[in-house]
Length: 449
Image (cartoon, rainbow, N blue to C red; front, side):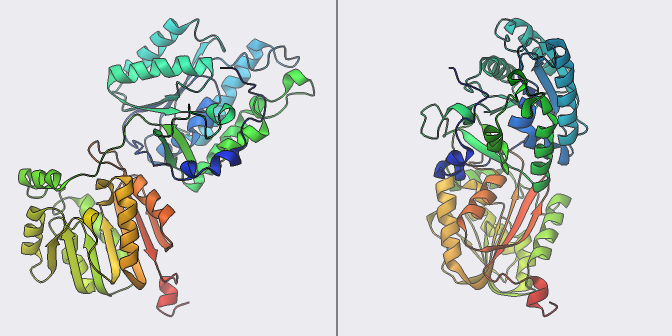
């Protein structure tokens, strides 16, 4: 494939206007353990994975950064910088960019020849393999997408894919030049595997600053055409997003069935440790504290499990209906909260009749596939009473068996509901969002404002 990398490429608005792009699923990014971000060239780590670096830094698990080539070929014939001088400048730029994104991330520069990685593939394989095998096991490898259309990206992507398979770690690939040479209808766009990592506002700001740190690539070094920036301003707008777009390896999974949960409860009385883990106790306290009203009339709890949260919700409800797909879980919940209606129900087959003043969807949305989740969320919205509240809370770490990630559940909810987001709690382990039909704040509801 050939393309002029200095040109504007496909307008970023062309991508953002496509409905498939706007509705991309979220990736269950691993926010713990050892992550290594590999770049073919200095600046790839920022353009393609800068938001991921910032997110992992904020999660307390900064990634390692490895840059394979020396960046010496970005300005052939430059009257300002010789190739050797350019190597030094670009090394300083990438270190500064990573410092902005993730101050504690180590940067390793392998120094292979820019534009000639195919010719030194064996050396690249050897260097990357030694680095990845050294130290703790790699949990997540973030690398250039093999289909990106740039020869160096393909070589590094192929090497990383083989190493990820050998090491048994998760592989996340980031496209970069795809956004330049392709259009949304190009058959080479891997729509079925594109995922997004939602970025906090501070991650977006840091990525913007990190891009600017690669000054040789985004600004002219002199008035000589050979010193022109290698990245066109129009192309750079492609990366001014509140998400990082990646290519994932996993295929879509169907909704989990009743048999999955029955088997889980057959093996354990309390399989998720609701009753004795501090994590769960703290999460319940957060859940109850974030509710905007002191008391509710009719409440629906979806996926009640053994009824630990149910017991506390009952203290703030006039009438509580708790449902779960597992008969074993329902039996244990009934023993725990004898005065509450607890029923076996599969919400994928239909949501109980409302209206409800409060719907609690805690740790259950990712058991459904995306079409089922979107349908259920629509039905729950229809069951919500005027002025009602919907609370969603989900674990963020990847679980191999689940069709969706917690981030994906909250992304689908955010994109499909007409309710107002009243409260948002985001941390490494969980997301907790409160949506309301009454947009007034708690102070406004109680006459304080």
